Length: 388
Image 1 (cartoon, one colour):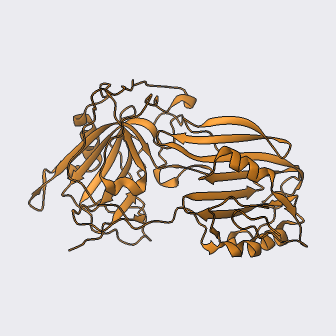
Image 2 (cartoon, helix red, strand yellow):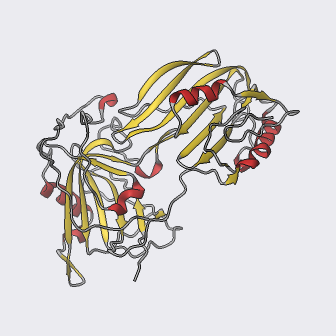
Image 3 (cartoon, one colour):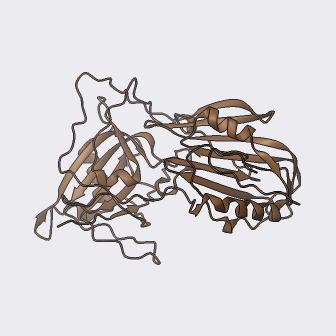
């Protein structure tokens, strides 16, 4: 009999070891489970040296070179984008110490048995990256506070952790999301314990099944309408913003592979708008009117470039997994009455692009070919085709 796997993501908010934390559930689907843990050490590969840091700009641990040795984790963790890289360095804390941190917060995990079955524990140690970068920073489900006066990172990006997987246990029930539906029945709880700060920085529950169905693809970008709906979306943007900002730049040509566009329902306030495009393995967000700029991740490359004759910044967003996306921003000379209404007028319009699945040259070319539109014009670019 085939069984559906269910996974509940738990956002862990833990200010210090021994304090309580809450959970917010988000449904997803995982792949078939495996029962054996892979070895953390592969002979003949390059070691990673551990390094504790204290500077706010240096909180990520050193990356493995020349090639990281990825640890095989339960495939049910794949929807959470959990990656672990092996290290030959001595652990900063022992597995026993990490387990004590877990049981101090979730005493049930120390019971030994549950409903007559022994509680199992699998453990892995290494450099963890949990979640993924997005347009404006790390995805929301893996943001963490750590107890060091506000200097710690707000996400797990190439940090030394213990990943502890407890089996034959009831899934942790959400405690702060009173409007959320009850979680599915789960029998594994997974925790990541930061080796430097000695706190739980992430957790999740999942259901183990050796006969589970394949994972159900999950949407990764809010672009839900066919590409033909882009014209209506741009008309709304122009109608709302043409007196609050000039110029309004729209794509003249979309790179190949984009098949859908986002819902324009949120673009109702003058001085700020967002247009999202998507396709298989591709994302493209155009954000106009916002001066917010994300700080680079630990492995992100920052380049100064020229965009439409103006100085711009290009971030090549990297994690240990490789390039995750591109961020590009510049100021377009013109006029802006920013949102919220009543903010001081500006003599330029901030443009920001986030792209996944494009090369640096493709993104820069796309930006350079954006075209000013007005209430009398429309923008209906199709993938790989010039707009009328």
